[in-house]
Image (cartoon, rainbow, N blue to C red):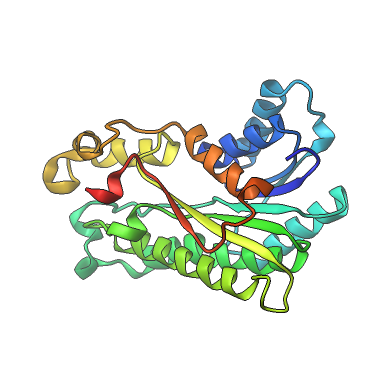
Amino acid sequence: MNGKVIAITGAGSGIGLALARLLATRGAKVSICDVSAGGLENAKASILESVPEISSIDILTAMCDVRDSAQVRAWLEQTVTVFGRLDGAANVAGVISKYHGMEEGLLANQDESEWDFVMGVNMTGVMHCMREELQLLGSGGSIVNASSIASMKGFRGNAAYSASKAGVNSLTRTAAKEHGTNTGLKHVRVNAVAPGLIETPMLASVASKHQGERSGGGGLDAEVTRVPIARKADPAEVAKVMAFLLSDDASFITGDVVMVDGGWNCV
């Protein structure tokens, strides 16, 4: 990744931050965006602390709500202006419903504003990012989207999130087909990762609000015991897979959704 320019959404915490740190250790220049100014400030400080050899000029930060296409365009165009090009992108920004796993989250009770919020960030936001990235990336570039195990299994009381991540999978495969080497368009590899239970602020929020209300009252701890690798993952474990997909080592991989879930998908 040495010298490559990578744009990352949702980099203020969790998987996005772990990926930014990892890429920086491998010599990449990173352009990170988030809706939280405090998160961005802390993320930049964390990267500089973790990677002493990196200069602050190799990190671009920008406030950006991915639901706003103009903000997305401005951030990515600024990335190219500052660094001269764009080699890859990771679309990690995501949200989960406040009714996740609760009776209020059942499809029969779906709140429309909550549906629009989750879809707006998780699917339309990814579309906004991919649309700009596909225009700015050079041939041979790579995009990695954050999906979820929920896109494959679906979860009770989690319709909006599950559907939004299934949409990410479809966007990923569609873009991969449109930008293959046999299409006449610039060649860009497009993949997704589908994490399971990862130790992120979003998962911690779900656990603290709804402990014991998911999966028939078993809660997240019960889910962990059902997974072949019976633990939650560190964000860095997902970041390593995303970094691989962004790199030239994954030159023959496109249109794939890679499960990073400890085997949860086979349960």
